[in-house]
Amino acid sequence: MQRFAPHLGRLAGQSESMAKMVREWVRIRSGSHDVDGLAELARKLKKAFAVLGGTMEEIELPPLETIDSLGRTCAMPLGKALRFRKRPNAPLQVFLGIHTDVVYGDGDHDGAEGPEGGKGGTGDGDVTSVLREENGRLYASGAADAKGGIAILLKALETFEASPFCTEVGWEILLNPDEELGSPGSRHLLAQAASRNHLGLLFEPCLPDGNLVGERKGSGNFTAVMRGRSAHAGRDPEAGRNAVHALAEAVVALHRFGKTHPGVNVNVAKLEGGGPSNRVPDLALARFNLRVATATQQAEALGYLKELEKEFSGREGYGLEISGGFASPPKPVTAEYESLLMAVRSCGDRLGMELHWRPSGGVSDGNKLAAAGLPNVDTLGAHGGNIHSTGEFLIWDSLVERAKLTALLLMRLGTGDIVWPLGRE
Image (cartoon, rainbow, N blue to C red; front, side, top):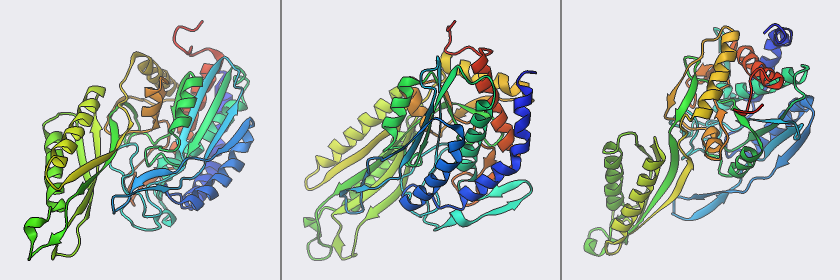
């Protein structure tokens, strides 16, 4: 520890500079669909991350395919991702990532998903501009999730690069603008990163008690489109096929499936459709989220959705189509993953931080990286609370503390004090 202490000591003086960055970043609207706001934030991040050296790419993402309120497939543009790389030929390659988008800020996040459970904006408008500081906390949308995490990643890596221990470690950073939507446009970038790195570090906020997430559930977002047949509600109701009634049955069936399958969570988050009360409605939509604990449950849930489609579409005059999928498979604690968690905990011990990990129903890009074969710890970011709400806050002191944790982990990897991959000589 003695040889790392002088380098970690330099982080102690970075508290105000980190706070200044986060204050600036949270004032920028960067909801997942706010392409202009995300572009403004990207410009500032390119300038901030230039201090690290290496290469930088700004990557166009394919548009998000979604279902509108009329049941039509449409495309929505996404922001650009930023990728930085340095020493790609070093013997150990480390991936570091976090997202630039937030849940609130543009009132346009129906169906969003991400870490620590129930996302989805409520249309509260530009709450990103709400900024208040008191009792060592910053209250602002995206403060903890995850603009504080961006600052931690940057300063930890800057500290590592200034040390003599960095030469044997190459790294890749991905800052993606669509994680709160399930990373539909950047998923292929995560898969590429998983194929060329040995381990991953993600900077989602830690748990409210300061600890890490271990096992994560899998999560999928879906849209059910029920079609019926319109008719006059008074003169000829028997000729109609009420899509709202049928969809209500399907929603009850989904709820029952979750209740009868322990470990499965079903959240029907939004209903749309219908029209004038004197007309039998011919269209209704339900947007819902499924969370599963295992790959087996994921397969069972998908099978059930197919059965549901078949059942309702088999009724005369009706049709049911369910689109979507599991963007984030379950993330179990494998032996390799547990070894990485233990390495992080050992760094915490040296810094006087007692770290543990526990399961979470939330998801992150760590689910996707793990499914692609990259062991990763995904809660190395800021300490805060009330994420995905208008009361979200960041604890200022956690910025330096968490930057020290990652910087120490990187320096120990660079010296071979922590050997990775497992079994490497």
